Amino acid sequence: MFSDTLTQVRHHTVEIEGVEVFYREAGDPARPTLVLLHGFPSSSAMFRDLLRELADSYHLIAPDHVGFGQSAMPPVEEFAYGFEKLTEITLALLDTLGVDRFALYIQDYGAPIGLRIAARNPERVTAIISQSGNAYVEGFTPFWDVLFAHAKDRESHEAEVRELLTVRATRWQYTHGVPADRLARISPDTWTLDQAYLDRPGNKEIQLQLFWDYQFNLDGYPAFQEYFRTHRPPLLVAWGKNDEIFGAAGAEAFARDLPDAEIHLLDAGHFALESHGPEIASLIREFLGRLPR
Image 1 (cartoon, rainbow, N blue to C red):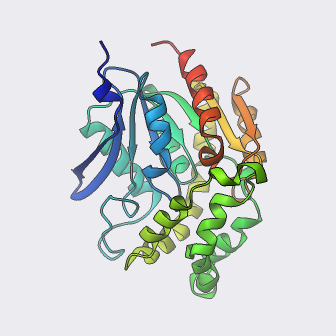
Image 2: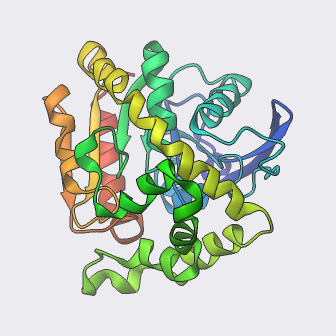
């Protein structure tokens, strides 16, 4: 019989390559695993409700990337902050936990990490769920103009980019694009917690480094798209159609390489789980339920 204890969210920290990595876990490890990879400026806390919702049927693991949430935050001088390194740490975590096969839930920063893992280890990935997890240039909006300018000239654009690390910008990430009748579902705890992590001494320098490094994720897009065409992973897209960071065109672009992709454009913004959590959980259950066990 399935233990009620396993439906509770558990919180763990493990040392990976000399740094402490925090992760949330829920569900029975004997069941199919779903690995949930968060974006900026959040942490695994963004999956707090989804973990509880799906724990009766799946084994769920949601790590905090190094520099985020409860994971270690070594200074930029002591850790090679970049998406290649975050991918390496994430894969090493899964290996340490003995997780061989898994589905991936990718959101924002979780996309270049998760898709690197998938493209390089296609035999390990059973399916992909994307919530504003971009893999196509069509997904970029004017939001990115200053970030790509910063990538070319950090000094000239750093002041502008630092504005993205303020509480006003963090709150906007959660509230923009949310229909008026659903705004009350967005807890102020979300942006308050994220901002508390961003305001730790040294964290803004970490985020600036990752902003700069993001440009190199685009170099991986051809490999990601070739992975889609060659390996045809089952794909569910649950994307906020009002997202002003990764636009709806990024969601629709998946169909070019994965014509069987299940694509849902929700009346939501960047953090669609906050306003449409039950709907996304239902879509995931139906989608994963169709996969062979």
